Structure formats: structure tokens, C-alpha cells
Amino acid sequence: MDLKEIKELVQVVIDSGVAELEVTRGDSKVRIRRQVEAPRQEIVIPQPMAVAGQPAAAPGSNPAPAAPSEAPAQAQPKEKDEEENLHFIKSPIVGTFYEAPAPDADPFVQVGDHISPGQVLCIIESMKLMNEIEAEVSGTIVAKLVENGKPVEYGQALFSVRPD
Amino acid sequence: MFRKVLIANRGEIALRVICACKELGIPTVAVYSEADRNSLHVRFADEAVCIGPAKSSRSYLDFPAIISAAELTNADAIHPGYGFLSENAEFSEVCQASGIQFIGPPPDVTRLMGFKQHAREAMEKAGVPILPGSEGILESSGEARETAAEIGYPVILKAAAGGGGRGMRIVREASEMDAAFSQAQQEAEAAFSRPDLYLEKFITAPRHIEFQILADSHGNVEVFGERECSIQRRHQKLIEEAPSPAVTPELRRQISDRLRRALHEVGYVNAGTVEFLMDETGHLYFIEVNARIQVEHPVTELITGVDLVKGQIQVAAGMKLDEILDGPIELRGHALECRVNAEDPETLMPSPGRITGFHVPGFIGVRVDTAAYQEGVIPPYYDSLVAKLITYGRDRAEAISRMHRALEMFVIEGIRTSIPLHQRILAHPDFHAGKLDTHFLERLEQAAGAAD
Image 1: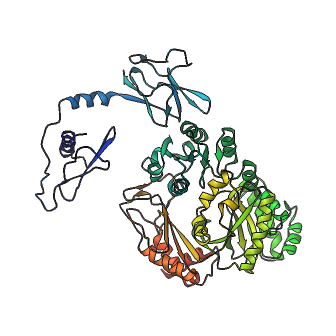
Image 2 (image 1 turned 60 degrees about the vertical axis):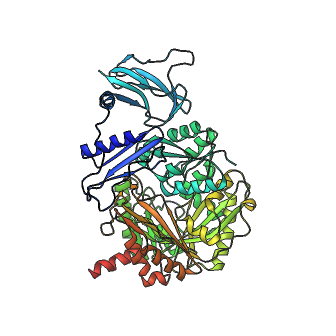
Image 3 (image 1 turned 135 degrees about the vertical axis):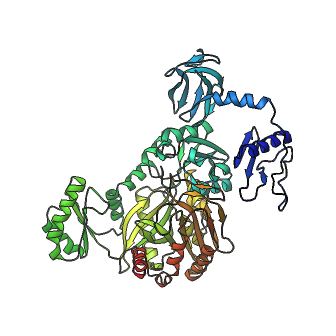
């Protein structure tokens, strides 16, 4: 995350009135917390980052929020819209993800396929038992989020789907 | 030594196991429910796998989830901690079948210890004193009177098929037996559909005394002295100490010898605790074996200098006791533990929530075993233990004085805790005098009620 992105996030906190925002992108994480008693922003960065974060307003300074007022980049709102519409199919168990019924068979589903409730999307193997994972919604597969043969944990996102 | 240990637990005991593994140079895997995503055991393990939603039955008690997590991470051993699956013989068997070493006793030993009647018989055969009682079900109140005459009053009639205080009657003399017998039978029939009763010696003011043991897989058993856990509320321990002010060196030696023999005979392996009740004349009576590491193990660690959790891992990896221990067990000094719980001190209701202020006491003679931290959350789904505050001193008085000081300097804000209760108990002259029994807390609370 770079300074521009952090400034944008600070602006989001101010504009929305939200009290606390934490964003993780890859290896970097930022948490922005608004102090309700004294109106100034405090930026806490738990992970080491390439770029130094925006310093918090000094104590006793002007009570109005002292943050930059740049408009968020145009690309972001559109991405957010699309992401908001996606449904994520999550693993109900711990195990190994298999995209096809057998090693040499075709995958159950591909990106772009339409799926309906009850349709088998993949297999998760747990303790030598093959568990078929079924779709709960009707829609189109946008992305397959796990590689074939990789371990998955409970709640891990397997597919993103655009519901009908 | 193991390639990787998975800890099938959460909270402070998971962290405790991680500590032992780090010191032994063994990589660790934490498993966690969604409610524990931000837990310290997840942070400090080398790897972590989310195994289910908050509900224990679908996470920490879920065999396939845990075994899968072990297989995915290539762990070759599982430490079950205490509670959860630690005394589940079936789970221990599933580990065995999956080629994973369960860090605890073998499944059939866990199973034997779980059947109280069988455990009693095994101990009795080896000369460990058991609570005198009827041989089996009592056929009539006449038989009850005969048995009671042999054992000596007071006695307690208990429902064979139940518990929880129902189908129980204390009988203080022979003349009360007939009425008590028929009342207890009626209650037992109503509550458990079986009127069967048995009879046990009743101890009016028992002390809860337990002995710590560790056995290797080569038939060697060692005993690490005893703990006294008489300060309890509804069978939940609040304060424990080692050694017990009521156990003489001679009694300790005698019981330890019998236990070494008994546990060797049943083929016990790994850590365990043998529980006794002590009556008013100082006699000990066997109650049961807890085939796991216990919450209060730190007080024993402090007076013996032995790391019991490391010992568990080493035993499970096949090491012999004389390789694990420096020499014969010697008890030095005195240790106390307070279980600091998230609870309202007045209503005693659990008080889960976010900890907004946290300062842990330290300095000489103080140990704190905790997974809590500032801004951390005590979730409502599991037990309410926030921290174990343990103090050590050259003698009991010093351990108590350090506990006073440490309780005063333990800051926990945002949730209610049992610290004020611990302070009241520790301030009581009977506590200082070592005049303890399992009704101590009841009396304290009654006195407090009367004073209002």
C-alpha cells in the first residue's frame, strides 16, 4: 500500500463517519481508528511497510480533522460495486480441494459456467472421505479461488459467483 | 522427537503447549474456530488452520476437522490440552488409526479411568485406599443399615444411575435409614427411571487433595507431590495450592508409593492426576483419576522445578523418565494459583466481552498463564477463564503475601472478574490458617449474606 492509498482510506473514514477501518492487501495491513472524544485521526500500522504512514495529528493541535482531502481514485468505486454483488462459496470443512471427480476427469465447473442450487461444484477430501460441495445459489462462476489439490480451511472462499 | 505438534485446544493451555514446543524446538499448528480468529495461540503457533464455527461441537470437538488439519499440515502428534477431547478414548483411537501420536495415555487406559467403578477396583487391588461403600446395588434398607454399620456413620445413599444431587440422602444414624432409603429410591426412580441405590461413606467437611503423576511408556511412574483444591464453588475450583497444608511427609510418601505401584499395574502412560478426599481425621480416600494435564499444573511445576507439559511431549516421543527428570522429585517452597474468571462478582454470571485495559503483575515469585490481551475478546462460547495467577514463595505465608500483592496489581478492565472474590478468600483468617474444606466458599458467602 502506498501513501496515496492510505490518504484515500483516511478520507473514507472521515467522509463516512465510520469509527474504525482495517484494510489488508497482500502483506500490508492498515488500521485507522477515529478517536470519538478528541476529533482527530490516529493511524495505527501493525505491520512493517515500505512507505511510512500519515502521522497522527499532534496532541493539542487544531481540533478539526487534519487529513488530506483528495477524492478517491475513479477505479475504486466501480471495483467495489462489482465486488459487492459477488457471492462467495465457502468451504464447510477442513480438507483438500479437488476441482474434478477424478484426476483425469474434467473439472465440475469452469469460470463462466452457470450453476444452480444443488449442483456439485467440487470435492473436499477429509480423512479419506470425499465430500461433494453443492451450490446454494443460482448464478455464474466468476473465479475459482483455490488451486486443485491445495488444502482449505473452514470458511475459506472456494469460488466467487455472480448470482442471477 | 516429533516433526510437528498440533494443539487441539484454545486459550491459555494452547499457549502453554506452544511454549513447551518452542522450547523443544518443535514447530506447532494451532486450530481455531471463527470466534478465536484473533487469539494469541493462533498468533504464536507456526501455522494455523480454521476448523469451524464458534460452536465447540463443530470445531474443537470435531474429530474430522482436527484430524484433517493435522493431515494437511503434516503434524505427527496432537496435544489435546485439558477439557475438549483430552479424555476422549475414541479420539485417541482415531489419532492412532491416522498415524498421529496422541499426547496422553493409550486409549484403553483413558477408557478404564473413565469408568469410575473400574478405576476404583484397579486402585483398590493395588492398595490405594478407596472411599468405603457398598459392594454394588443395595437390595434393601436392611442391607443398607448393615453396610453403614460396617463403614461407620455418616453415610450417603446415592442413585446408581444418576448424579447432580438427586436420589441422594445423607444418613447420620441407623434410625434414619429406612425413611431415607425409600425417599432416595423414589427420587431416583423419578429422575433416572431406576430406583437402584448404593452407599458411600459421607465426609462432612472433605478436603480435595490430588496427586500429580507422570509415567513413561517403559513402565516407570513418578509422583510429583500433591495439590489441595478445596476452594471450590459448585465443584469448580477457584484456588489451588501445592503442597497441601494437611498432608504430612509420611502420608505423602505412603500414598506416592501406592500410586506408583497402582499406575504401573494399570499400564498408565503420560500425565495424570489422582483425586482424593481427605476426611476430618486426615485419612485419604481415592475418588478418580483425571487422565490429562490439569488446569492447576503450574503450582506443581513451581514446587518441583519440572516442566510437566514438556514431560508429556517427551514421554509421548518415547523418552524414559530418567532421561526427562534430573533426579528424584523434591518439593521446595509453596505455590498458590487463583483462577481469574470473567464473571460478575455479585451475580456470578459470566462476563464475556472486550478487555480494554490489561496489566499483568510480575516480578519475583509471580507467574501468569494467560491468552488474554488488551483489546482482546473473551468470547461467550467457551469457559470464562481469563488468566491463571500463580505465586511462589519459600513458604505458604510468602506465597499468600505475594498473591495479595499480585491480585492488587492485576489490572483487567472492560469485563468483570473474580479478582475481588479471590481477595476476600485470601484475606480470611481460616485461609491463612490452612483451615480448608470444600464448603469453605459456601460458608464465606453465607457469612457475607448474613452481614448484609
